[in-house]
Image 1 (cartoon, rainbow, N blue to C red):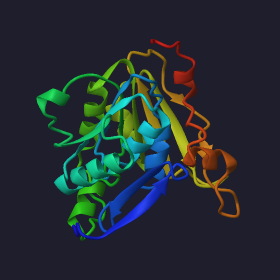
Image 2: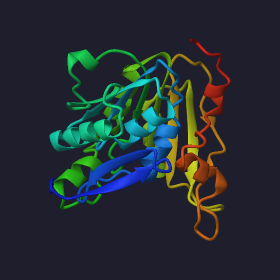
Image 3: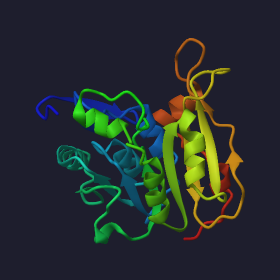
Amino acid sequence: MDVTEFTEDAFLDGRVRARQFTRGFRSGLDAVMLAAAVPARDGDTVLELGSGAGVASLCAAARVPDCTIIGVEISADLVSLATDNAAANGMADRVRFFHADVLDLPPELRVPFDHVLCNPPFHDAEGERSPDESRARALQDAGDLSRWLETGVKRTASNGTFTVILRADRLREALGALSECGVSVFPLWPKRQLAAKRVLIQVERGKRTQLTLLPGLVLHQADGHYTPEADAILRGRAAVQFSTYAERPATR
């Protein structure tokens, strides 16, 4: 990875600004949608697995000013960059990043969190591998998707949520690794009448309801512009609504 070249990118209508390496994996719409789907409240603790440059964690923190967030990332360069991004956004006191393997967390992180989120590697072991090693590591899961999901659920407190964004064609694989109860699926449709390319999955730990397929969200209008609903989420003016969680009475 070239650790000398960056871009500075704005998220949530400029409320979050983050430097990202010009090469390797870069966060965008997926990270913002993932953060918008986490139903954190003031005082909650949040864990991000595979935090990269910290975009999803920082967006979640901007949405909920009084939650605390820990991000875990295997790349030391990205941990350093994410830490700098937290400081630049005035969030260093409540958003911290750790250099660790998501699949082998240190003892101090093997504790329950109110909410866990992750954007795991999208491609399976058979997918085409990027020649850029840092990008390949971020995108290729080496057959470990189920372990990412199991880790996320395990770190989620009772009555908390685990939220993940995935390629839609890996939904069956993901559901096979999760409990049959408390799972909701929220498709992200690129345009009306087009198949979903991404899905958000949320697990409410301890909830006994069966699998729920939600209406989801259409991202783009026919002319390519964002739909008003998607635009509101990307600008930080609205959240992704998993109605099953919204119906649950507050625990605080």
